[in-house]
Every structure is written in C-alpha cells, then in structure tokens.
Picture 1: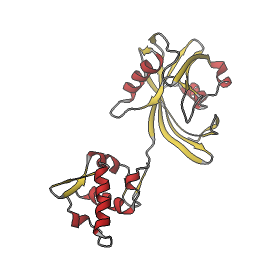
Picture 2 (picture 1 turned 180 degrees about the vertical axis):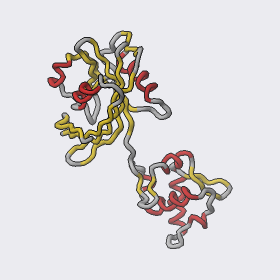
Picture 3 (picture 1 turned 60 degrees about the horizontal axis):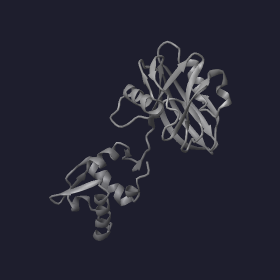
Picture 4 (picture 1 turned 120 degrees about the vertical axis):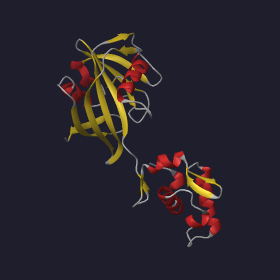
Length: 237
C-alpha cells in the first residue's frame, strides 16, 4: 500500500508510537536525535494528511490513521497491500454463459464472467453479488448460491500485478433485460463451447468445471498476463 505521507522513517516512527498509545505530547513523540523544527515539520505533514490529530496539545491517530494501522507492520514499519475482494455471478441459459468485456485497464478487452467487480466497504458478499448483477447486466437475480472461492495471484513480467480473493456465485433464475453496454463493460451471451475463441480470464474454464459441484470449492490460482491477454492460469491447490 503506497501511502506517500508515511514513506519517511520519522513519520513511520511517529505513527508506530501512536498505534500503541494515544494522547502523546510533543516531547513524548520527539526523537531526540532529530532537530525539533525538522521533527515538527513531519508531524505537521501527518496532521495535514488527516492521519493524526492534535487536541489540547496531545497527539493521536485519526479514524483514517486507525484504518491504515490495520495494514502497518510494527516490526518492519512497512504498510502491506492486502488482497482485495471481488465477487462474480455466473449467469447461464441453455448452453450459453454471459460474459463481460472490460473496457479499462489493466485487463482491458478481457472477457470475464458477468457480473464481476470489487466488494464495497461494508457490503456483504451476497449483497454485492445481487447489486452488481443488476448494475452491470440489467438482470435481477432470483437465486444466488456461493459455489467457488478463489485465491488468485496475477503476475506481469515476473512481478505480482494483483492479489485477490474471488467469490463466484451461481445464478440459475433471473429476470429483466440485458444491458449490452455499461460505463465500463460490454456484455454478451456466448456459447460455452466457444469460450476459448474469446480473450477470456482463463479461470472461467475452471469455474465451469466446478460450479455445478455440490458444496463450495476452494482453489488457489496463479495466472500470468502479458499486458494484452492472460497467457496462463494454473491451479496450485
């Protein structure tokens, strides 16, 4: 997680101290090896960023600071980017599946299972699946069943591009009219036998192998993207 206001070691140390104890005075936070005006500058920058606050000459973390603290490693003073969470709904009819082509990077022009998108803060998985189906496809789901959980790492040129938890819901009954395009998607019904003709997220194939299994399937996947398409997708667990 790249938080520019916490890149400097002095700011990291201030932040670390306030994680353990709030309402510290300037002298309690002060690093005696640093000039007071220099230290005060970094303190002021953290206040300006809304990460810490000053009340009655005492300093503590703000709500924003508390959120950052969840991802702050006190031993290394690094802030780790957590895996994000996404939700997808597999809509099928006869021998077709609804796909959604992404119109923005980093996976522009790749076809994913509709509807798919990130979980919003405070939102439940099923709630997200229901919302996204309506927003992204125009269909209203009548049943939603969680079938697959993925842990996915995506590599680009040997470096991790993204890491996320991906929850797949099955939807057998839905009503409404398809939105062929939305702000950042193009939707299309595709024959399942023709899937590989499209520039798809390769785990779509894996999804269709497991989505009708009983219970919930958990899989860990490593996939690679060359900037235009996915070149591989391997189940490692």
